[in-house]
Image (cartoon, rainbow, N blue to C red; front, side, top):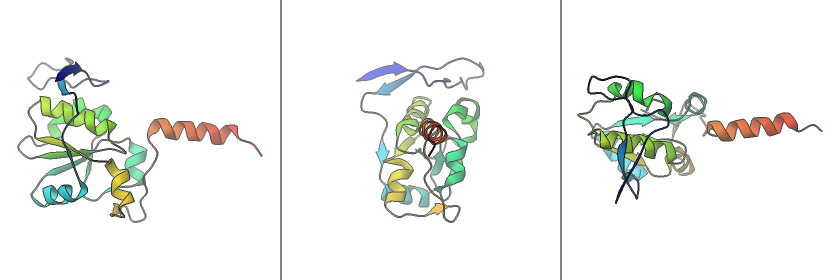
Amino acid sequence: MFGWRSLSKGLRSTSGIGGRWLDFPVMSDGPPEISRAELREKLDAGAQLVDVRAGHEWEAGRIVGAVHLPLADLSERVGEIDKDRPVVFYCRGGNRSSMAAEALIAAGYDAVKLSEGIVGWADEGLPLEPEGGTVAESGEAASILDARKGAWRP
């Protein structure tokens, strides 16, 4: 039922021994997921909402009330997340938020991920900020699209 894996940068130990990689147990079915309706209920009850996408994705559009903590920075900034309050992670579609939730669950946090990420949120017509915000491509997809645009000449 459990496997072991590490985040690409690892989750640094918060036990006072900085700089160590932490392997964490992963449920084979992934971390718990919540729906958009459940997210609204959790936020009303005081949960934290954390966007783990890249900077350009955050700037393009985000869920109102979220804080930005890119997955690549999680190990260094995990102390910014209140361990005494539930935390909901989201990304574009679910991969990065799964890694973040799994890591924090293993570290003793009450963590879940938003099902279908910001794509599902926007597809349902729910609000994004800033006004007129959009769902950006992930870093990898954006670089591929940019390369294609640059290579194409009429």
